[in-house]
Image (cartoon, rainbow over all chains, first blue to last red; front, top):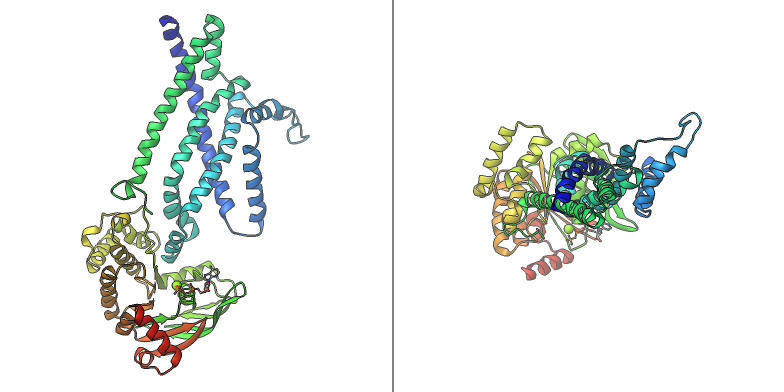
Length: 236
Length: 246
Ligand SMILES: Nc1ncnc2c1ncn2[C@@H]1O[C@H](COP(=O)(O)OP(=O)(O)OP(=O)(O)O)[C@@H](O)[C@H]1O
Ligand SMILES: [Mg+2]
């Protein structure tokens, strides 16, 4: 049995480091950019074209939060090739599985994180905006230097949760033929007839990845909370 | 010199400032008094364009703002360079040390060299008696210390006018005193200031001019001596009511 495990681990790890983690990290980075853009659009009070943008942003968040991720993956990978628009996509939109995975995971995590980011931006007291405006800053600088750094502290724990969730959700990519960690465990199980062992092993590996990530989260939280009171409590 | 003419501000149907005409002289301290809800904060915040009245003219030095028209961002920026605001709740930036709070505006808004800004910030901290707190975070300060940092932060911008909205209302009497002492020295250096306060003895001590407003109307606009000697029953009642609470 020991031999089965030691044979399997390197293959699983390679798949994890080659597909699972990169897919999660790339998707999360893109997702965060989307989330910030969507959150800023939704909290802006500008009128005119912004009304439409705000509506689009809300519609996007609603759409991706109210449909299953697995279905989204299927639509992007199996569905889009059938989206034939003469002149634009005469042969449908064909994506390689990794791209389809990245696109879907980014959009999905972006929609969830947009709500987190929006709430954290709104949690910064109005007085911070006023103090920053009073010293002559413009909106962009206020956001960059005053609001976002403070919001990040509030947002960090829920964002880390989203990221850890994403790492596990990448296992769904098995359904669009990506050879990530879970797929490899299935392949091995199919040859050595040890499904219990293989799936337990891959579960443990996900747990290891996620544990390392939560250590990273606590480290970041400690770094960001340097400015809370000496006792480490929150500023009221 | 700041001059307001026919300034009117409404929140919905509520007329908060009603046709205000007044001036805030240079190098002097003007104190705004009035009962709660009379529009003092709204008036002060209008001077920094944190509020936008619907009507009226606002002249500050060589700048002219017509509130009836949209205000360009250059004008807003120029007005905010001439004025600084000190808030009741301090509003220090909690993610920055005291020193960083002081150099934030000079370095990033005024584009001063960082070394110069730091040197000046240290001098200012000494002036407000907080030289040893440069590396502390705002959460590690008492209310009185935090407000003195906020005052130093506004001085670091070299504003023509400092606008203070009840700077000591959130403080215990002891801590209030240390802040008032700092304000007194700034007053003696002839920094132009506009202060909203409920502290009558402080108003008496520093005001070159008093503006008394009630329900958005100017009820008194003149010398401090004239205000405290006024025979106007409304003013007398106000002074009496405030004196009892102290
Ligand atoms: N953002 C706002 N929206 C609606 N009404 C407001 C707003 N800000 C102030 N008001 C109203 O305007 C009036 C004047 O408020 P303001 O804060 O200027 O009074 P104040 O004289 O500073 O009072 P206090 O001494 O209690 O600070 C009040 O009736 C208040 O309810
Ligand atoms: Mg007020």
